[in-house]
Image 1 (cartoon, helix red, strand yellow):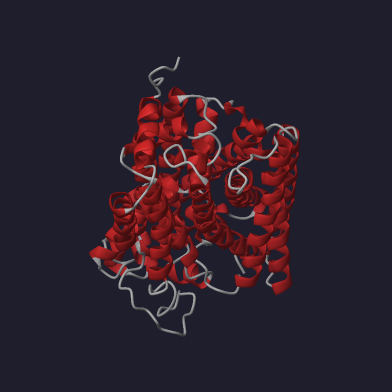
Image 2 (tube, one colour):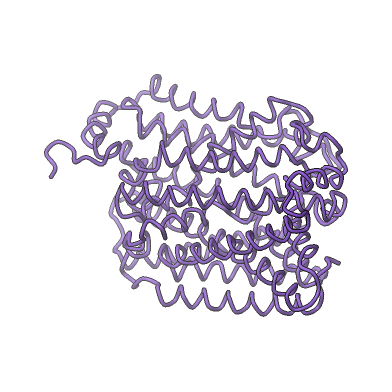
Amino acid sequence: MNGFDESARSMSLTAFIAVASLTLLLCVMTGPDRDDLDAFYTGYRALSPLRGGLAIAGDYLSAATVLGTTGVIALTGHDGLVLALSTVLSLVLLMFLLAEPLRNAGRFTMGDMLTRRAPGRAARIASCTVTLAALMPLMVVQLAGSGDLLAFVLGFDSSGFRTGSIIALGVVMIGYAAIGGMKGTALIQIVKTVVLLGAGLLVSVLVLDRFGWDTGALLRAAETGSGAGAAYLRSGLQFGGSDLDMISSELTVVLGAACLPHITMRMTSLRDTRSVRRSLSWAVGVVVCLCLLLAVIGFGAAALVGGKRVTAAGAQGNSAVLQVTGAVAGAGEAGALVVTTMTTAIFLTLLASVAGMILACANSLAHDLFAHGRRDGRPLAPRTEMATAQGAAIGVGALAVTLAVLTRHWNVQALVTLSFCVGASAIAPALVYSMFWRRFTRTGLLCTLLGGTACVFVLITGTNLVSGSPGSVFPHRDFNWFPLTTTGLVSIPFGFLAGWLGTVCGRDPDAAGQRRRYEAVEPWILAGAPPAGRT
């Protein structure tokens, strides 16, 4: 069904089981003690800049991003390439605007960062709620796709096999997060990034070799194979020529990807601001290289596999990476090794990405909701908080697996857009205001987080991702009332406006005190300089 021979399938399964077992063992060996919160939440901030950069790049390049970007490039050409460049731009934005303030303001979670300005239960509970709203959809998409991916690689097509695959992979991901904590998941991300770079480089070399290292020939063949003709290499194929839709989507990717909680959480695991700068430099370099490799692979999929076959395996083109790998690998043991390398990289990407998201949600639940969000105001003992975080990882993972099993027959790609929209419309305004606006208050923070999230959830129900198109969640119904594919062009300004109105018009009884607290730590947050009176 996918061009992989029996030896490639057998080798891929063996390699996947071996890598999953070894990485799980690595998590056990590096896991924190039962009462060591700093080790669980930050890994003692012991990563070198190179390893920190590889871990950030690994968190940043989720399986949905890797597979989705390659598929969009294969199907839409120019517009897919713009999407890949937007992904890089998002990380550059994080590097130059938010990374150092996030490191200086944070302790363990996004709630710690935000409550520097607005201490209290309400801010922590809102932060935890938005963290779950942003990451749970992205986890469900990747878990739901894991069964299809494993079936595609191994040649099985039964419903029971797909369900069992989702559950088995989910258990491994939960183990990564609950046992390894921040250090364990960072090591898995590093391994995943290195393997993904190697696999991407190998397949890209084989694709270019097919065309005599002539990129012009590759692009011409991709244009022909895509079935879209000359429109393939021109803007507008993905969005039907709508400039507003394109601007909305790119704005959502640029702001949303940079501010998702599992990315911002990674900043707290870096040693100091100098390490932040050097780690982000490595991360940007790695992401640029991978996006270039994915572009070559995507164009190779259009040229060698063809748009019809890519779409037949999935409307979103998520199988394009594996299809073109099978096309260039050839027969024999060498071909099986190429296929095995790529499939291992994809499954490592899937496992590591979801594990990082589970950890971010679990940390927020344990630290923001249970440890510091209680009515009595008393924090939990370290051992209790650690057990709570591990239990939360199991609970979050189990919920994600359950939702993935229930929705695996649906087209759930809309959930990826939902996650990025929440990151761009609620989290990004909250972080920007919290770091850079002195007057920002608790009321403004709550309006930004909850208002931005609510706006996204309302607007996305009217997009063509939910109904009114063949690739929507409900393809046979049409209640499409919102004219854009993503909500960013409306929900992002709404999130910023809600925070401004909440601050200016809200009756916050301690607005002056909140401003004084911020001014006391402002030098530390923005520049890493000790505040007045602090040595």
